[in-house]
Image 1 (cartoon, one colour):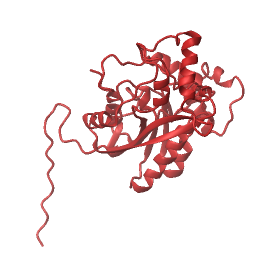
Image 2 (cartoon, helix red, strand yellow):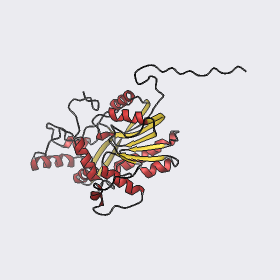
Image 3 (cartoon, helix red, strand yellow):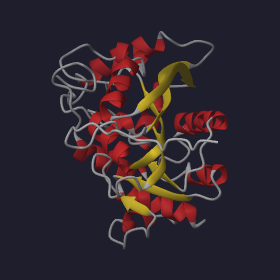
Image 4 (cartoon, helix red, strand yellow):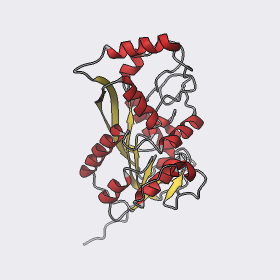
Length: 306
């Protein structure tokens, strides 16, 4: 049974995802309208959370658009960045140094030296950070790139210090519902599948987090044409990468039928694209057991008599 969705047989092609996100380093800026809006809302949530971390990790940083925002929010913290796609991380390094990439530069960066620390090319399921070394992990739309969030959540929990905070966003099952309905209903995953908020909450608790808080809202982007939505999905590396995705769409007839079905949704001259946005945070509490399962008993000094 798949932890991510509760359905059997759902898995992502992680090699394909890494290649797609690598190519998207040159095209995602400007096409990531949804991620920018979610980042703004995540930052607003921090207004109501008291935390002064010494080290903050932007996990799944992409080209680094959230790094400056985090630096402004936590001016005394060391801001680290990690992404599994080396070209994304290279672009984030250029952004932090205030350098604009020249045409063709990102292609050459694949063969250049890696970005200097505090940047790390890393898989969220195996982080190159010491246990208890981070005060906060910020993760904006990284979780949809995983078919099972639990290993990544366990790694985040490991690297957070006691009292550390995970701040995250992801997408729920109703995301891209219009596209899902318009495409032919044949075997295979034509649209990326997303984890339910309640399943994600279960995974957070199983990973060891305390007091997870989540909420969901629907955001709708609109496009003049269906091709605009498809272009944004490709430009940000977010196109479907399920192992069971069909190859092709039954030729011209399939595409014509899909376009006609989507066109029927047009309102006020625009086509809608709905996203179920899940935001949340959770804390790393003091452990109640040791790693081998023994209970931890804490003794407090007896107050002195007056």
